Amino acid sequence: MPRYHRLGNLPKSRHTQFRKPDGSFYPEQLFSTHGFSGPMTLMHHLNLPTSVQEWRDLGPCGVKLLDAEPLRHRHLLTAEMPAKGDAISGRIPLMGNQDVTWNQAKVADQMANFFKNAECDEILFIHDGSGELDSMFGTVPFQPGDYIVIPRGTIWKIRFDSLPVRMLTFESRGEVTIPKRYRNNYGQLMEHAPYHERDIRPPTELKTFDEKGEFLVVVKARNRYTGYIYNYHPFDIVGWDGFTYPWAFSIHDFSPITGKLHMPPPIHQTFQGHNFVVCSFCPRVLDYHPEAVVIPYNHSNVDSDEVLYYVNDKFGSRKGIKEGSITLHPLGIPHGPQPGAVEASIGATKTEELAVMLDTYHPLYLTEEALKLEDENYWKSWQVPNS
Ligand SMILES: [Fe+2]
Image 1 (cartoon, rainbow, N blue to C red):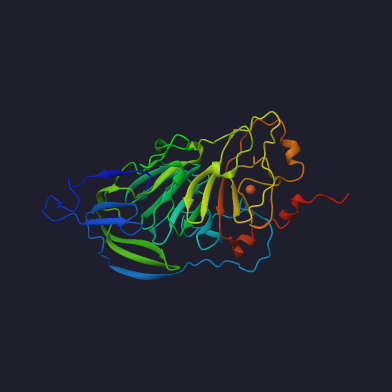
Image 2 (image 1 turned 180 degrees about the horizontal axis):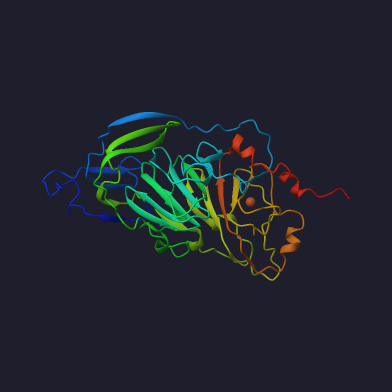
């Protein structure tokens, strides 16, 4: 989606005869994530992509959301979560709505099988691991602090250099894009955008596997996992070109926009989803008006839920936060710095905070798993004693 890219070998013209040395065809496939009008990629395989040996039902994977919870600010502590499962089976859904699901993971194992989310684009945020995302489109190396955007329908498998690894996965029912206001009519990122095409890392290497055997792709769709068994390696593409492929972007490459007076959260926006945004709060100089209040004012996000994941514990406007904390400030009630935070911030010239924010236009509902991580006294942290 970020720009046109190609890897491997392709015929000079699309939809023309592209033959192997033995004279047979490299089967062609159009891979499109929004009908025939959205971003798409053309690819040639070694094998027929429609050929499947078997499928089996691997069971339900729907998320049960709690819909009868009273309104209040929430704080979840993920630091103590035990390591469990692989990058898919270890996902613990903490909250969600009709547009997006927030999954938390402390990954214990490498993936044994391949994975495809057939219904959602995914944004992975790698808190503290490194490794490589292998996919049908090639390999995307990653480091701590990387976001990896994976279009729906992509077959992939992630390899970590060491474990455990903490990561988030946002599953998006709608398309994940770069905000439109960052781009010109040609799709190019403009000068005021907080990142540049050079910061976007598409697959670097296309590895084509000409292997026969039994390969399981776990497909997530319709609230179930379905196992698709192929008799050839699913990374069998010899060449592709187009706009749909997985790509990485480091939170450390986000260039914060700063100002004389406090700048609102949209300046931190990184990705756009349907009815939600993802923002990056990064180290930066603070507001430079001589009498500036350098942390946020109280604000009523009357129409949106605001969730922050604290990648470190240096968030100036919030007390009681630990690395790995999540705060959910729901729509309808104001939030802001805790008592004393404004006074304590006066004179500060920079912040070292690092956080990922999800803002949604529809309410987010927690899961039972989220309640197990909750600091139930968080809502009291703004209380001012009676005098
Ligand atoms: Fe806020």
